[in-house]
Length: 395
Image (cartoon, rainbow, N blue to C red; front, side, top):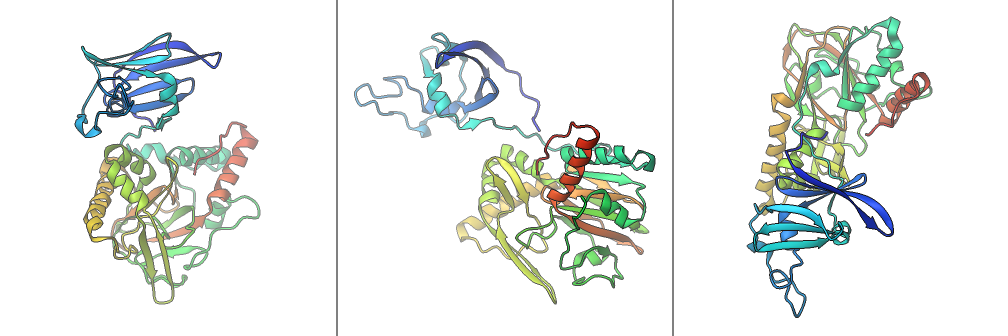
């Protein structure tokens, strides 16, 4: 998501490039400058521009052509007084003061564009009304389309009054020939304190204890991509679910604390599930990325093994973890949902974290895992057949 941009001033014009006209605009922002070239954007911090100033005499030695300014000498808060395009729009003029201006060749900036097409993430704003819908069997097709829209935009959907037929709900999200993802618990989990139907039920999900935010199965190499929780019977007291878009939160963390983001995306940690008859270990970062995109979040405090990091890195990593958690646990970022009998929530296990309040009484939820590819194939095929306007989903 893109945040509301600050006020800026801009210059727009066309410049020749390799014999063709191109459209260029420059925006002066709070701590960086943005060039817009056709459909591409390129961001440059002001300190980077000052560090790479080509001015001979002030920044470059007149005889050797070497830089004579150490970036440590440049204030991190430096900001130009004025920016504009000059020389038939082939150069960018950056005015630092009345006696110092930098003239950058546009070609140099294009070749060194390190902040190209950067997305600016705002703080997540979770509103339950955005993700809820009420099932109407007369409008089953509308229901599937609305599920698609919410999953694509928010990473989850809450459906009210779908009913207690678990197999019918499974059929809603599986294409022909596909099956749910079986785990070491079995095909379908019966999340209840008196469970007798599942294997390896010696874990928190089968108790009445509170469970804090986590993703499921981070201790295996290929966790299920999506999970559906269907309410068969609600608790007498408590038992509400909390969900948060951790992928969006990670992008916001990158905006406000790049060092914390770097640690959580680059330092591997160990997830270890150890039960009486099952054990699995996976080593990897909490936040897995592909380029600038968030590929997958792995987050599970109850299966996170002791950190085995270098001594000098350990406290920094704890601080990064806590910074991320401060976003995840901010009520503004959380969806709080109480499922009633016949309701379900479907969410992306690579993007969303989920939690549960402690409860009393015979609460009973069913858990079903799906593959990303199966759910998107079913929903996209349905949308294409009925509207022809679906866009490919981003996992």
